[in-house]
Length: 217
Image (cartoon, one colour):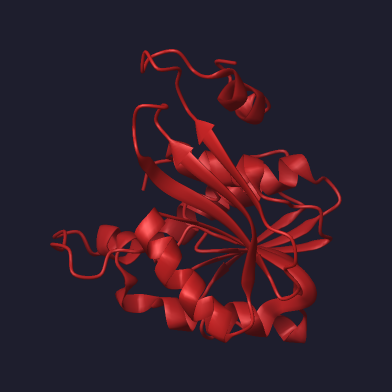
């Protein structure tokens, strides 16, 4: 799967201040690498179920300046025990399609459809692996964010910060970046427009957020 703009926003926006960080479904390794760039003192476990994606992530990470910070792990997150340790931060860009038409490519289906990682099992893994004072950051469309938040609340995980992502001010929100924790009190909500209303010029806020990662800025 190719790198997408909304995943880059997650990698640039999420709080990655922790010492131990977990990337669930690392794909190309994008979030793990962005985290390593932002937090040079972190140790990151990047878990991926798909063999081809795991291989690509391992190759990308090995070729980066951050290879000593990131470990790639080929395993289902449902089975991943992390040697009993827990994480200060967990990041994930999970599959979210349920009843949509399937692709003939099984790799695409695994990345986009929830069959192999239903929200309930994702939440179970997060509850098991997250430190009591840790944060879980998720990227999803608005409707799926609501579904996830409802299930997460049953596990005592609540949103404390949320970024709504739009193409520009005249377009609807198409993705939400949400921070969950076990100790959420005050909640902060923001909106980010990728472009100015002309639909072509990158907004100042988007440029500022992605400046350290986009070579064109």
